[in-house]
Length: 186
Image (cartoon, rainbow, N blue to C red; front, side, top):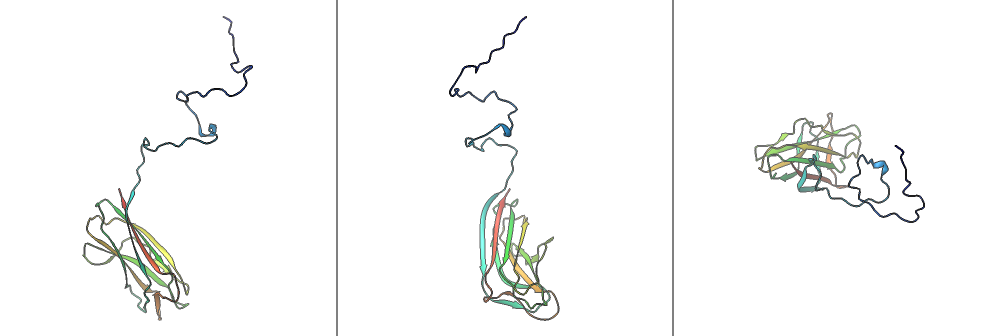
């Protein structure tokens, strides 16, 4: 049987009418060009993302110093009360500037008090270590307090050893120290 092939665009000029893409399959992103219409994410599935439920901040600009080689309380704390036991708390500490003698190092560590039980260092934490005369830095960690009671985080600090004084904060060397707590819902 003989077949006849037609070229549907032969002799046509101008713009062709829009057609529905409902029957298109196996269309790759490389075939898409130009501006695409905005779409809703309402139909997306398989995505599990936490939500920020609350944010609490504290700023410290008070002069604080110590010559202790063991952790001492800085007096800087920030408290949050989680909405659910499954919530996590993102703890963010920014050490504006620490003032040290050139031979000193200063360590900072986050401690936590859950429901008034007393402060304990948070397990599996990397200490913030500064070893320049006016060092600063950040310490970020995700903590699972597993409670709906008040949770207070506090910074402790110490010098590395030897003798001398370290300044957890020195108002002559800005910026201030800042604490940010974010409750992340499941």
